[in-house]
Length: 257
Ligand code: HXC
Image 1 (tube, protein in one colour):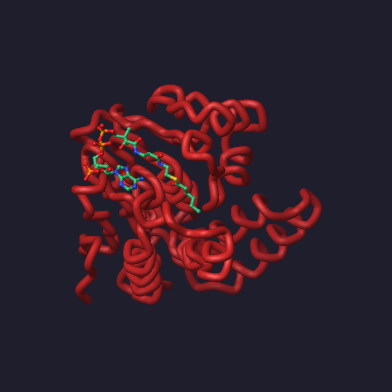
Image 2 (image 1 turned 45 degrees about the vertical axis):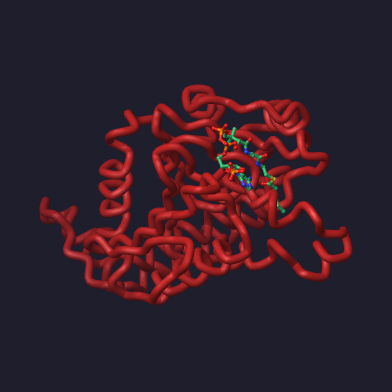
């Protein structure tokens, strides 16, 4: 498929989505949203893909929602046009998604990274929710997901001041799982994605669903969900294979995709 604002590629069992609006630091306009959602859903439906990586350019993962596109709109138009609604479909993709962030991840760019399951950062990465500087607030999940990622007080300071944090601070805060030299970022993302894609996919999907449940439900409910999904996996061929391989001191050969 041809997309206008992104590049897509499959490397092994990993689907790559590269934001490609360099003239606007990958600002997320409605075409980017349509392209990213369509590409992510296509990879999700593809049995040959076991993990997805979303990345931008060296200079910017994404500098936010497209301010030029939004500027003239009324509140009514923003609500009725449901301008950002389709991003929910990106967050609902079952396949694990890694954000590989180099340069700016601001506003909607930071929010897009937080819709992914893992955030890997180049040492050049800068994260922030600068919407207060524009007279608005985060609108693609920033006030909700940043709190869950870094805690109330850190999130409140970032969202209320609009300041940026560098990769080291983002890692200390728990937003980023690992910081790597910028030149290693894409290789690292590919390796991490390959590792995930080599597992039994029923268990990977189940793990992602249980992690999502942890974000969304009280502890008791999440624990119940986990226990049931854990038990259900004992009816998969890959569970028998994985545990047999351990007993036989060899690598497992997972077959379930
Ligand atoms: C549209 C953008 C843009 C954006 C950058 N550009 N960010 N266009 N929307 N969010 C464009 C610039 O207008 C410029 O094009 C080109 O990209 C390069 O940007 P510069 O500003 O010249 O680069 P630099 O001086 O290096 O500064 C980089 C920057 C700055 C610090 C990242 O661009 C910046 O502050 N951008 C806005 C960041 C932001 O506020 N994001 C939050 C958006 S609101 P031209 O052609 O003009 O030279 C948001 C809400 C999400 O995300 C929720 C929605 C519901």
